[in-house]
Length: 352
Ligand SMILES: NC(=O)c1ccc[n+]([C@@H]2O[C@H](COP(=O)([O-])OP(=O)(O)OC[C@H]3O[C@@H](n4cnc5c(N)ncnc54)[C@H](OP(=O)(O)O)[C@@H]3O)[C@@H](O)[C@H]2O)c1
Ligand SMILES: [Zn+2]
Ligand SMILES: [Zn+2]
Image 1 (spheres, helix red, strand yellow):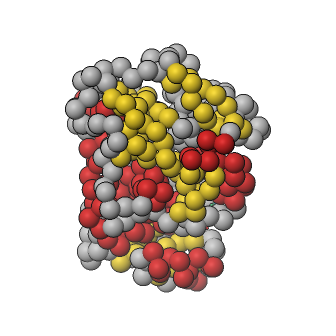
Image 2 (tube, rainbow, N blue to C red):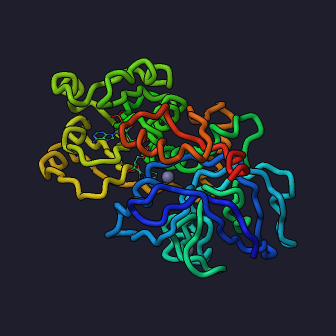
């Protein structure tokens, strides 16, 4: 074991503060990574504040962070995919059994024995896993991704969660040229959804509570922005969408979007508000519409997404911050005041 620097929270109401944690020495299959950037996902905030206590209670102290890019500093003797000096990335998963039907099908995110990057039982050290708000992480090579060489690293970090979470359902539901696609909420996930839907050739409509995000939405690749609180504007799009991706982090009226789907249209939820949403049966029945969810993506698909981003020069629009500004960043995230993802420059941890 060795010591690493990190930022952790001691309770649902404590701010994140500097801490020392332990990491395992790399085993033969492990890659040790010096973390350069880590994105701030709204899931970090839900977890720190224990808002998902019913489904995934938070174990304190918690070190969040699952949008990680860095440089390989050490590899175990059986590691073939990476060597010291390589760029590498880690997302929401760091282990799974590799043998269950989900793993065999490439859906490690649905493995009953999966290990999440933070707040998940740690098979090696006991306790729970510690995430990317740290200077170092040690991960089995199966869960380490290759980073395209032509992308900015700060903007690549958010692809590891916001990127794959929006790419995967769009591929699954066949977003292509000629489809009309909606993205609800222009935050970290939403702005990546817009970039992917545009790159896949769809007509893209953003639904936002913030009318002042219109210019940004169009610059990011949207064709239109609809202010979701304006009922008349919403009504203009009734029964017209093939697919809508909902990225909203808080309680909202889901039926307003279901009613915008055409026959056989699908609304996929990736946002994870803590409270249940009320879905009207008739909204679904009348046009054979479907309502579903999606959770990040498997490892092979995450690599496919990163390679797609390399080919299409897609990264997240980031505001780079030092780790010391992380608590302030959370307050801004809650006000939807981020353009469009915070990415922590981990060099700032050296002064702690
Ligand atoms: N399924 C998965 O695998 C997965 C993966 C990552 C994250 N998530 C979840 O996805 C959600 C979004 O994450 P994120 O990091 O993209 O968060 P974010 O950057 O905070 O974006 C959320 C956006 O939702 C909109 N919004 C916020 N509060 C709202 C309200 N009360 N009513 C209507 N709209 C509201 C805002 O967009 P406008 O200003 O445009 O309205 C905001 O920018 C979180 O719940 C997160 O936990 C799920
Ligand atoms: Zn996330
Ligand atoms: Zn499995």
